[in-house]
Image 1: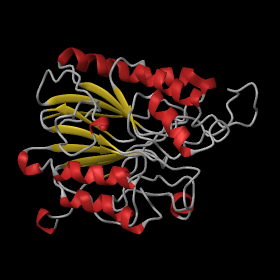
Image 2 (image 1 turned 45 degrees about the vertical axis):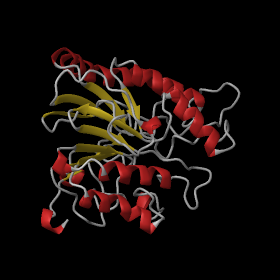
Image 3 (image 1 turned 180 degrees about the vertical axis):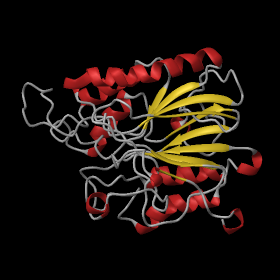
Image 4 (image 1 turned 90 degrees about the vertical axis):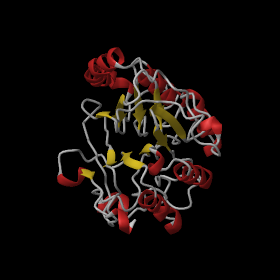
Length: 326
């Protein structure tokens, strides 16, 4: 599974740097791209919780139901990077799944607060011999892709959620518009909106935002674009769930926010304008990291997109800004 995870962790904020990449992990197929967060008090292992009561002004359709909350301060969340599922190689994905299952089963028995978050790019962006009527159709973004991904993610026996990546609306032969493609993506994964918010433990939220453009992108189709509605929703959510009130928020997106300090691919994502969230819109591009600096309730930010790995120094970045400086 070609995966990557971007992770900005801690009780502080991300360092503002031009080079950006938070924790990534690449594997030839699906084996070993995962990130498990298992903490107490400030716990993270991706769980799809509930937040209907936690974002007063937010769109309730984006709020996901709670699972158990058998323990107030423990949870386990499995974070999956870019799966890029190839239907011809599902045995590799099953091997990767087998790595997760003992962890999930133990957590379910212990406290029950368990979930998965996929960071998007669910299908392989090539022809995978999946359509007998076409030897050129890309698998990524098709109905078959999303149905297969939903089946795989749902087969792990715990709730899952997903944020859309740059390849998830790439069903060009099947859909004429991004709107049509997005509707099929949302339906396949049981989502009402591209964003989600779940409660995983007491005053602890999992929050995700997904890309909504491909064909209609102003510049490169592979820019990960969070629309203004999601940005406004996110700003409202973090503004109404303050650290001083005890809230802890873990954020998920396909690409990282600019300023995260994660390593990037200069010759690929940077020069093509698809490196950071809303890369081509300077104001929006800076908005995400500014919200991180402003709101101390944001404890970590996970992303994929780069296919780099987790075995280098800046695959995970930590906040270094003094709280008094924002």
